[in-house]
Image (cartoon, rainbow, N blue to C red; front, side, top):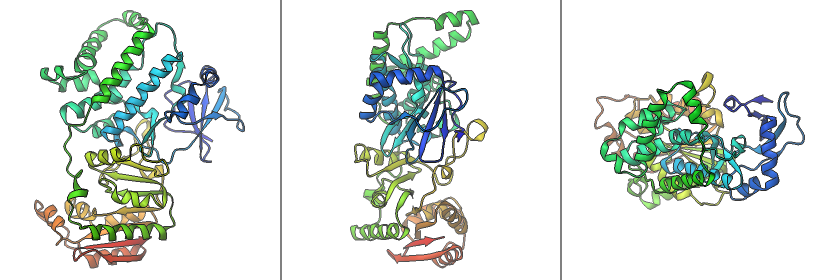
Length: 459
């Protein structure tokens, strides 16, 4: 067993990975006492039944590592995602989950001691809180000390997109500590924004208080930390935050969210495309994981979900991903489709402490099959990637791939090329076939039209 590279920030808990399909969490004596108490009181069981908290139990077959008091085991979720890969609706639901757990814990004499967005994972389109070590005993008079972190991890990015129309993903990817409410968001908001819900209280006033606190000496700061607040007041503030976050909506523009209803395919062509993907999934043998790269609003992700236990549906357009997420919310859990905001030209890298705190995309699970439908012309003609490089990506990602080759004569390709000075001369169907054959086998090929051809490749 080894400690997870991302688990080091909490001195009372460390995650271990025993590579057997479960996650083990080592707890300090203090954390183990809280864990046992909340299990006896039934809070954990209640939250698990409600689908809010990951299922867990004390580990009986493995002794805690030296220096730790207890081990708790949880099942491994199908695919790990990070807040900078979520759509607006996903981050909002993760924020609401964090607030709901905070409120319920307070009602039961406990509290969340931190409010990191990384405490939440998605099981398909369902957010689940996974950091059992975040629960602590409530001390009478204690304010919610995680409020500042909640603002940076949740409120600031949500306000940025809801009030300024700016997608938050690249900002969160650039800083694993979130977006600073005081130092980054506040300067972006105008006087007119003070009229927007939550801005005066949670942005401008906080920025003023933070600036004033920085001027205090160490003793004065310690006195501030000793400030007390009745539990009812803390709970009331959390409830107000819930109402505020619930009302937030994205104002960011989207290029491709309406593509599924306005593309160039007729119903029969779409049906043939779906049948091809379905047959490829059967030939690939189904399994644990598939990727739909450039998934848009998930039409073919749903086809893959008939054969794979988890489908990661990724697209660079946050609006398209958010539309898919909205359609999947409340869907049966046997259809595990995880929508993510991912640009294939710049996928999530390894980053954080020692470059290993957050894993790159492929390291989190290799798919048995990946689909690249109506994508190759955007990448090769629009972004300048040579065809052989595109096929190398497909080969490195999975053993099986479905690629829709879109010729440069296609109307969508001509649209992409309209603003380009030049494109690679060897972008053509014959070259694609030759490059694919040099890397593996073409298991199936079907022409959808004069300018579009589907391939099932095995590498």
